[in-house]
Structures are given as structure tokens and as C-alpha cells.
Image (cartoon, rainbow, N blue to C red; front, top):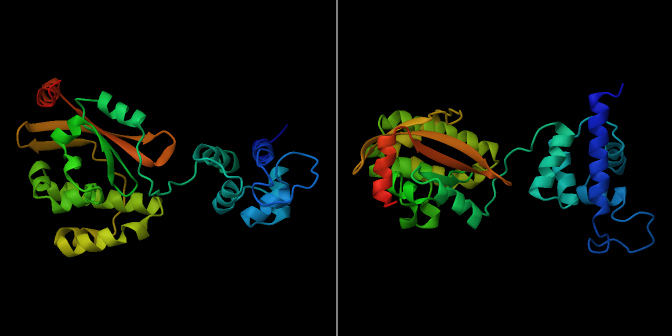
Length: 276
């Protein structure tokens, strides 16, 4: 009987062979001399990945045990894998997807914007791993915040919670909400390897908000599990929404947050303000 480990190793090896066969050696700076098979040689992949040729050969042969995440990331770069291909590599090599990595590229495709728009009257936004809001629908501008009125570098949910006086009025039990947000933000930023990127903002918030400074120093971390939110809107009055978080296809660094009105009455209130 073939073990699961052997089967997984064989699948990983097959995938690696297939990916290197699709690369052009000349385009990557290797000599165009006669080759028995198309693509890069094993030692050339190892050279590009800065790993031992023997270790890489073992991986293709399904030997040597599970590789580390660092090795897989090096191989992914060496083979010029897309995000989806890199994820597949991790699933084959480690049985799990790669950790989220923060990307400064914040472009949202028209397709994603259409998804957000289709969710009206439920407010919906797309945020990065460091909680920058990069897209939103009409309902979000009504119920949450009109992020179009802010410069792009100010469209951050953490900033809004602590620096906007409106946020304190809108959120019932503001302190509890803020503490939960800080702990979830810290966990997300660390998970994405983006603590260096958020340092300037964190330092600024520590100076401007004594509450944030105290909460940040507590070093709490947890997922954002406050799925039911009670919002005191200046026009709509008290409304209750359920928050759901979804991964964005092909962008592990982005999440879609949907705030679904709990009652039909609340949904109708939002619809009336949207004008739908």
C-alpha cells in the first residue's frame, strides 16, 4: 500500500517538474545549449531558489520529507509561480495554504466592485491585511463611512475607530468594540508579516489617542469575532447588522466584510437612503 506521504511527495514532484518545464532558460539568463528536455534543469531551479541541488532533486523525487515554508517560497519565486500556483504548491508540499502576505498593490478589479454593488442594501467593503479600505458599495457610505471623502492614505478602519468622533457616537459600547478591533488588527498585521508597514500609523495613533496607546500596550490578539453590531446612525437611528468576513478569490491579502441588516425594517431604512 502506498502511504499518504509518498503520494503527496509524488504529486509535489510531478508539479515541480511540470512548472520548470514551462520556463524559458534563455529568458532567465541560462545558456541555450542542447537540452534533453524543455525548460530549466533541476540545478538551475536550485540555483535560482538558493537551495541545494540535491535537496531540490529529492523534492522532485518525493524524498526527504516535507519542505519548510521558506523553501517553498524560494521555489515559488524561482519558478515564477502566480499566487494561485504558489498556493497549490503549498497545499501539495505542506497540506495547507501559505500564510497571508501583505501586498502594497491595492487595486480592486471591476468584477469585485460589481460584487460589492450587488450586495446593496447590505453595506460591504474590501480591506487589506492592515485594514486599509480599498473598495466599498453605496450602502457602506450611508451606514459606515463615505471613504471617498478621505485621501487614500487615510482610509483605514483602525484610524476611523480612534480618530473619528463620529465612530464613538455610532458604536454602542465603543470601548469594547475598540479593544476588539485593536486585538484583531494586531493579529492580522502580524499574520501578514506587515508589522513594519504599520509601525508609523501605530506610533501616530499612540500619540493622538491615549485609549489606543493603552490598548496597544496590552498586546492582546484574537480574531474579530464580534459578528453582531449595533450602530446608532444619525439619520437611520439604531440598526443591527451581522458582520461576515469572506476571502477574496486570488488575493489572500484582501477580505470582504459584509454587514447584513438583521431585520427587514433595517434593510428598508438603508434602501430608502440609497434610493433603490
